[in-house]
Image (tube, rainbow, N blue to C red; front, side):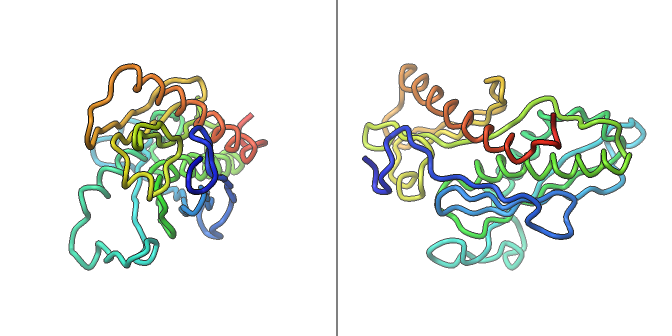
Length: 241
């Protein structure tokens, strides 16, 4: 039994509130335990220079943490004059994950910006950002289709992400910050609803892990992703058939 009462294979309570921001083409607030992330999707005409004239679209992301999303204040990166390496890594991960889910040709020469703003952090912020961004993206695409800008929703799979790790020899699903800070192995798994992997990020902080432990972690992660995708599908009924 973990500190919050969950079993090793237990997920934190997850809720997704769609249309959370009034002005964004798509948005949601995702809550995973005490972690909360606002995800918005904004549609702009035009694409980066390397795609101009090709008739295809682009999806990219930005990620940020509010100063008091943590127990101690974190400085805004804008005041430091540059983004941290972790920020670059996460926002690229979100963008890659969403591009895996979409047919860019259907978008035309449009860019969809996904902004992930962490308003409260208790572990798993990148995973919550990916899971919530998919919902925001689909809501924005639904709006484009409703207005006749695109003729169909160009999404060919659902995508969600969850963390899993080894803490003092035990394999846990959906780690809190306290668990993550003690984990000897930390794994972030991004998957589709058909069980395919988009990305697996795994690191041993202490003892290396073996193939058997890897397989067990991936199996546990798939169970978690399946639950998250079920929640996404409930939210997106009528948007993606």
